[in-house]
Length: 357
Image (cartoon, rainbow, N blue to C red; front, side, top):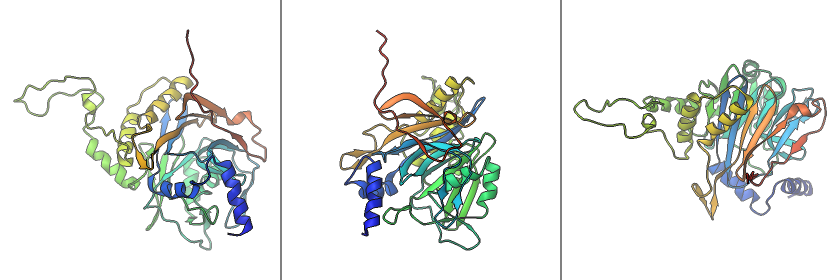
């Protein structure tokens, strides 16, 4: 390995809170990582996700101001763009966003899509964008999903890694504003853009299969129902919640899609900020992963490292972590959005317990 590669890799390891397991962890992430994203609308529009894995990559809440310069791998720069806020791993002063929202209210999250994601080689005449550039490229240029659809028409998603020694994450994306939501998948047969009427995304299988699978759960209801088994049997409703019998409860990506879609589509709350944010965390809490329930071997377990909820109208990024259930927040508009340097905030860790006596 050349000296410059060693230096660059060393810089990254300094940001992340781990050492010897780094590349092994990346390989496992390609196989195992699971996440869930969702949208929610009351008076304002909310966008967020869970990130489920066994270790943290030094995640930070990152505000990218309008005049921070993104150097694009296939030439050119992204300058004078919309400001954005989200969770990222900052590597070589570059925000590798997992999820983010821009100042106009457009949100994007990338979720694992191993085995199905396919990226191409650069093509002349196309906007050749890497998977790690996709979030800032769209959020920097687009104010709405409608504008993102137009921008994506000339995009060619390429397989260039951030560093030569790092694997290219296999992802698909949920893109949403208060008016509409889409799913973006780059497959072997080409790029697909799906309307996403449920405002939910998990992992495999591809999105069109996830949507078709909801047909298998059309009998679910939020109210108890009368006996349709047989008019010749006296069957009793012995518990509340029996209308939801059959709703998946395991941690697989297909089951999480069904569960969050059902919870989100039937979710009710007040319209205040506190009520809306609280309800959003309850929605994603329905697929929270507890340590011990998803074993990866070698005494490692996948957990929900963090859950995010961004008020896209106000630019406030709420989050909690596995070790700190208190909701914390960063307001992008309290920083200089005309600046040139990143603003970073380490997640607050450790439970914040309020004693009452």
